[in-house]
Length: 139
Length: 202
Image (cartoon, rainbow over all chains, first blue to last red; front, side, top):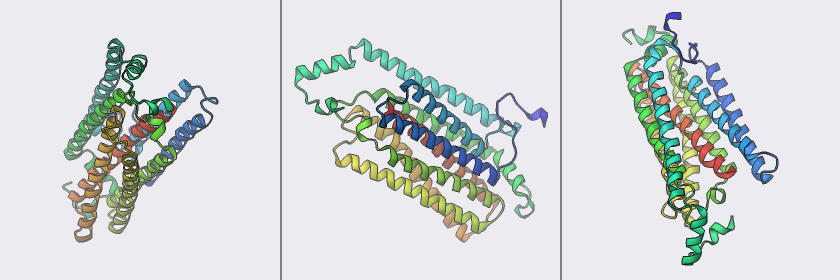
C-alpha cells in the first residue's frame, strides 16, 4: 500500500463505517454550534466581548475545518491511488475558485473606489437627488 | 462489479463503486457545480454593499432560524450516509428507512427556506429591490433548487427500491446521490458562514 500513497495531506484511510459518519456528524455539529454561538454572543454584546477581526478569523477556521471533516468523513476523499484523479480535480477546482472569488472582490472594490462609488459619494448623490434613504439611515 | 452482488462484501462493493469511472465522472460534474456556486458567491460578495437604500443583511437575517435550517440539512446528510451504509450491507428495509429520513429532513429544510423567502417577498424585499438582494436570492435560491432536484432524485430511488431488488447498478446510483447530497451540505456550510454569520457579524 505504501506505493499507492500520494503526496497529499489526506489519510490513506479505512472504509466507511457508522463510526466515520457519527464522528463526522458530531464534529460538524460542534463546529456549527461554536461558530453560531460566537456570532450570537458578538451580536448581543454589540461587539464588546470580541474583537471583530478575531471573530472573523475564528469563524472562517471553523468553516474550513468543517469542510475538511465532511470531505473526509462523508465524501471519503482519501490518498488512495484509485482516488487520485478525484483529489487532483478537486485541488484544481478549489484553486480556480479562490482566484475567481478573491479576484472579483479585489477588482470590483478597486473599481468602486476609482469610480467614486464609495459610501460618501453615494450619500452625496442621495442627498442631492432627494432619494429616500430612510432604510439606510436606520442601521 | 463483475462479481455477483450476493457474494461481495460491503467493503468490496464500496471499493469498486468509489473508484469506478462513473463515480469520477459524477465528481467532475460536482466540481463544475462548485464553480457555478463559486461564481454566485463572488457575485453576492461584490453586490453586497449595494443595498440601494433598502435593507442590509443585519435587518433581514434571523440567525437562530437559519441555524435550525443548518441543523436539519446536516442531519439529513448524516442520514443519507447511513442509508448508503445499509445499502452496501444489502439491508433493503434499513436503506429505505434512512432514505425516507433523509428526504423528510431535506423537505423540512426546503420548507423553512421557502418560508424565509416568502416572508422577505411579503415585506417587499424581492430580488428586484437591490443588488444585495439579487445576489442573495441568486445564491441561496440556486442552492434551494439543487435541494429540490435532489429530493426528486431521492423519491425516485425510494420508489425504485419498493418495487425492484438492489442491484450493483442501483448501488452505484445511490452512491452518486449520496455524493450529491453531501456536496450540497458542504455548499450550505459556506452559505451559512459567508452569507448569514458574516452578514450579521460584519
